[in-house]
Image 1 (cartoon, rainbow, N blue to C red):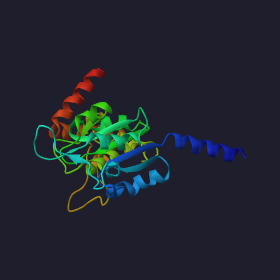
Image 2 (image 1 turned 30 degrees about the vertical axis):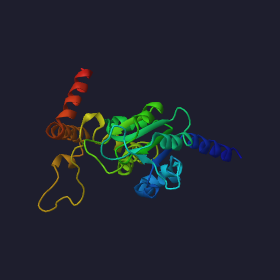
Image 3 (image 1 turned 180 degrees about the vertical axis):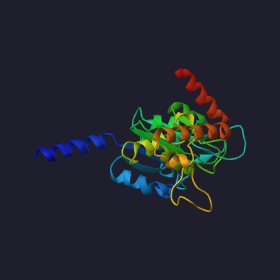
Image 4 (image 1 turned 90 degrees about the horizontal axis):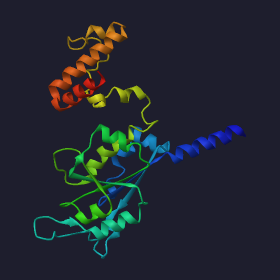
Length: 250
C-alpha cells in the first residue's frame, strides 16, 4: 500500500545520502577495527555510512607483492610507488570523488574540516607507510593532505580511525542528541565546560550549586564563563579565534 511505498521512498533517500568511505591500506586486517563497535557499527547497519577496505598490495606488479622502492636522489627509507597506488585508486574511485592522504606534512585536521567533510558523499583515505608516496601521484590525482598533529605515526591506519571517527559522528542520525554536538569542545572555538553527575557528594566534593538552581539562564552563563576561562588558560590560539569571532558580531 501507500505506507509501504512511503517506506521504500524513505529507504531509497537514505541510501542515496549514505557516506561511502574507502580506505586504501597495506594492512586490511586492521579494519574495520574500532569502526565496528558502538555508534559506528549501528550507523553502518542503519545505512548512514559504509566502509570498503582496499588492499594496495593486490595491485602490485610482481609475485612478491612489492609496493615500494628507493627514493631518487638517495636517502633513507622507501616510498610507495605511484604506478601501484594509482592503479588501486583508479580501479576503485569515480571521477570527482575526494581523495585524502593522511600525512604529517598535510593541512591541520580539526573540527571545522571534519564538519565540512561530513557533507561529502564519498571519502577515500590513503594510509601511508615508509617515507611516504611519490609526489607525482599526489599531483596527478588531486590528492589533499591532512595531518592530525605535529607528530609522526608508524602508518596511516591509526590516523584513519581518528579521521573517520570525527566525521561519522557528525552525520545526521548517528548521535541521538543534536545538542550534544553543539555543546562540544571546538564548536565556536571554545573548549567544553566541566560536567558533573551523581553522586552529588563524592570524596567530600560537591558540584557548583548553580547547577542545582533550576535557573537555565544562570546555568548557561556559568557554563560559558567556565568554557572561556578553560580556553583562555589551555588554548590561547583558540581563545584568540573566539575573541575575533565575538568581536565580529558587535
